[in-house]
Image 1 (cartoon, protein in one colour):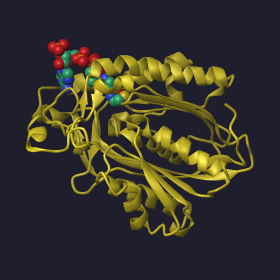
Image 2: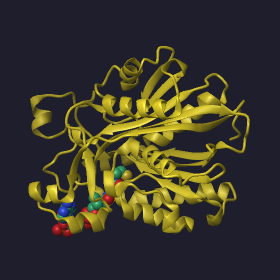
Image 3: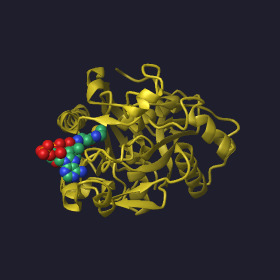
Image 4: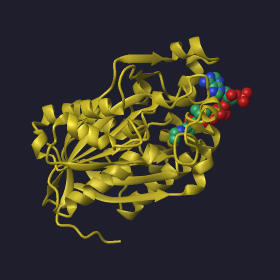
Length: 334
Ligand code: COA
């Protein structure tokens, strides 16, 4: 479907925040039956960051402040704040409201968006549409999750996978249609509900002593089932987006994949014909931070001077729902 737009939405700022506390693989050896070698070879994860005190709004606020400081953005200029998260501070108000107040974005509106591990891609697309319409000039899109708040640290299948973190991107309009968001394919399939979810705490199973006793307030995942569909879903959609835009592997500077498992990432890169150097990775240091994986990769590679204006990049994710998709962006910052 052709997009009606007045401008292209381009990324003009990046910020990120990871808490200091580290849970390395050795730590997990001390609390569950596992070992460093198993975790590293099955997932690619060496350590993750854990927020001991505070909530998702702290991760998001710190990421936003980092962006504002580095890119000289004042709080009053921000028009809208979109936060992708599955771990909001509370069911309501939206974490976007808490962050708006904390950073002093007195002219902004905003909302939370929930699409699990694909949350950032969905929020990015939404933010771009607001900018492309010409209605807003500065939209802050944040991916932040305190996964440690919904992980059962006695469940060895899942607790080793996740970490806490936040990252933010600023979107602004450009009249250069060759920069910024070029195309995207986003999908959902609710048939995936049973394989990855959190049963308790919502309107289906409001919290009771029983729901807590049954550990329904923790993330549940059938890792093997999710792994199979994630490998296929992420690889297929990324390849489809390449085909749709006549992109060859040599045209692409980077794949920016959701960081759930290095083996899922490798399969996607292989399908796209990309070598390892063209794949952004930070799963080894942070694990799966859900909505924060893609923007934090971008922030790290940008800071390391590895991105240049004109670079063609593909963002790609798969998550609970199921939700998945791929987004084609041309880097706009010199
Ligand atoms: N340490 C040691 N052994 C473990 C373990 C751990 N932390 N966790 C599980 N195991 C065991 C299992 O019990 C199983 O033992 P069994 O064969 O005796 O039953 C064995 O290791 C192999 O488990 P399996 O599930 O086949 O491992 P895997 O290679 O599929 O890897 C995941 C498991 C979770 C890493 C993998 O399935 C995965 O990454 N899934 C997708 C997760 C994801 O991406 N989620 C986010 C949304 S996209």
